[in-house]
Length: 429
Image (tube, rainbow, N blue to C red; front, top):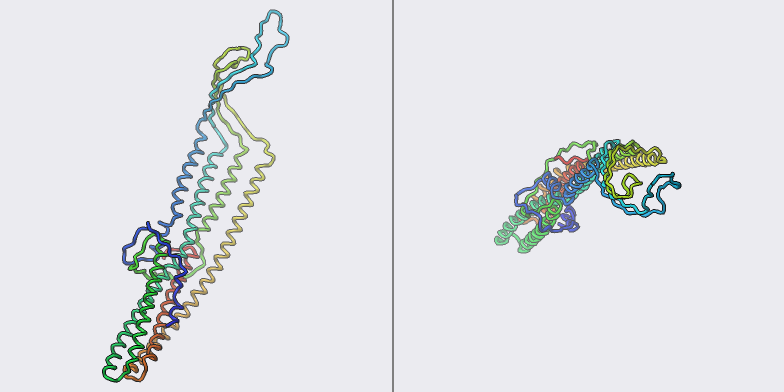
């Protein structure tokens, strides 16, 4: 029976961390599609989406406020070495000389009228940046789905294996009762019962270890999807679409598209850098002197108007920034091409695995039919006293091994299809 262990996933390598605060699941069954849904709902990174939306809303609101009037208060006191004056005063004139110490307090109001689209483009850039970051969260969650598959199908395999161990134990118990009856009738030796009893104990050991491994795998699955799964929960065998194609719908592709749009939006901002900017301004104040520099008294004053600013020469700074953005787009294209190449290669490898497992399953029914006939014959011989219990146990174990092999290949094939869908980007079962 040692070969039975070779077909079980090594669960001791799976991390089994307990989430104390995770909600408990009391339902009797759990499906793979629901596991995906719970992952997308409970995975810790999901919280980032709400935070990203909140941050983007605050940032965009701050950008929009640039169209609101700005109000600034300024105050200064200065002393200067010289002031405007008339060197030679005309006869009969009394032109006062301004003070060298001057004081001024002003309230300045500015209202932007036209910015060439800079604010609108900045809002678009912030929105695309948030979308790209949210898409990165989706990419990270999608990658975790392969781990969900591993844990889910590990539990499913151990679940099916436990049924076969239980069947084997029932068969051995039946044969043990018949052998004990034969011993009482003097047609079998007492050691035959000991051989069967040892086989039963070994099967129980395997069932105990199998259940412990299943509990560990359930805990790992629960950690990934954010719930506490009761050991009595039965995992459903998923019904998967067995058709395979090479059409990719991975979230990474949408991420690359958003990154390209972000670069385009950033380029549009650069296009507004050197456009004219028009604004209204008003200034009111109190100082000595006021607007009349020849009046050496504190006076209120006011001025207003319209202002035009236009960067005519920026020494090709904008041109260089545009070229850098074009290079960034090329880098994104190269990354997308590499991703598609690697993903298509992985799909081909997964298709080969599916074909291999499909071929293996085609011979299992014939093997099991042969093993069943041999085991049935061995039981008859054991009952007739023409076969030892040890020889019977060998044939019984061989049949159980064939049944477990077939179950393992069935589960592995289901996982291969599920992994193919994850690689492809399709998680709808």
